Image 1 (cartoon, rainbow, N blue to C red):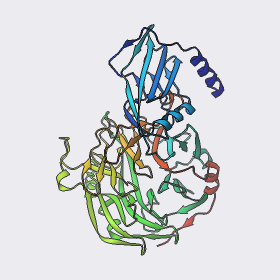
Image 2 (cartoon, rainbow, N blue to C red; image 1 turned 90 degrees about the vertical axis):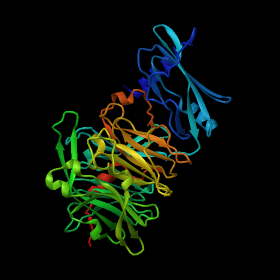
Image 3 (cartoon, one colour; image 1 turned 45 degrees about the vertical axis):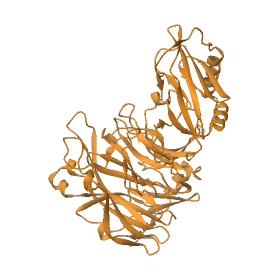
Length: 493
């Protein structure tokens, strides 16, 4: 629908909206989608527009905090807040609770649903989010893009388009310390490479040397931006014979390295390139002195036992001044007390992937699944939060769902993380935000708000690998297209 026509229709619906009368109280929450009931939100989030599931003829929403009030009346079942009124309410409610009441007309009668709250925290979330929009299928993609969204508004733009990079598949975009002036994405295929952004200047890097099983696949920056740690992976897809399971993806070979971006030098370590071990998903600690990654015994591959691939979360020391590695690998998770699982069909520990350390160094967030490191089709995949000071593990019951919850990213203040969840239908991933308060308690997550309340009902793409950034990126899709035509900057050992 044309945007101007949509706005005119919205104004007409508001003008024709009725005022509730002869209201009957209902002791239940409104059937709203997305579920924005009893959540914690940052004071800089965009309006939480929503709709009511069912046949509704009108809706009134009243949001109050002390003397501040915002009221919306609309015809039909969709609710959209005026963005200026919304910002005024959140600014006045920072650090406080907003009480929300939804009154709706159905079958010619008005009903007032049980009230709920929005706790508005002064801890803001980083204002920009990048993600890859991709069909949630197997080996085919169409109109693949990587996009940047301002979470304070509904502004979105394309930062990489597969039509402009010769229809190549694009790996997801990551930041260095949530800094928009330091980021990287990977364009796959012949002639591809890692596209490095430094202050808006884009370079194409060929991060591969003889003896490596592949180019860089999963990667992360050191805190000063001089190094990246990355894995090289030979990835095999396969289909399950069981109808309840979809695609399985696993590594047959994988190693971990560090690249010095100043010297175009690749640093290796025998402990990270062991042919009997599969190593993947490396990330630096916030002080740059450790590398966390996931490792599994490769022996089950010889027996075609994919379920036997149980990855542990491990750590090795790294000296950024000399570019040297430690002499031993420490296992962080699982420890002996966590080797048993509640699922009776598995007699070994859960498998770990996607470790991410909070910028303040306090917490380690990771995903667990029954086996392997490709959890997006594993309905049992959940997130866990480890306190690195105490070793305590929070299984995040308030955060996880009965579907896949994976691929998380921290906000720069360590108070928020965003993750991809398939909790709605098990098929399409959507970005959810979760608040971690100063006591380390996780709060109920909420999905990224959209301008049109029925957006997610009509969107046929998954939001893949959401990453938070502190500001807008200084490049666009045309800049990436031009960078792809550059000669690659090669690396050596």
